[in-house]
Image (cartoon, rainbow, N blue to C red; front, side, top):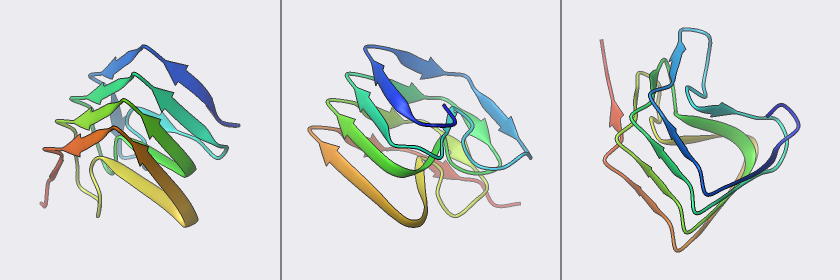
Length: 96
């Protein structure tokens, strides 16, 4: 999703970002909106979702792991995160 987009009624699970940077499930430079979406059990070198303008509506980000500063959602510089009836919980930062 290089330019961003809307994901609705989907599950993103089991992704692996390896050591290529953030976003083991989603890495976007454009606006991202998740509606009724679950992002879970993704593992990589940083967060499951990385972007600059992220909105979650009735969505869940849970059970993800990464070795960066954030394992669920990370924002680029001057980023903006909006959560509406959404849950971000039980994401784990793995330190080596």
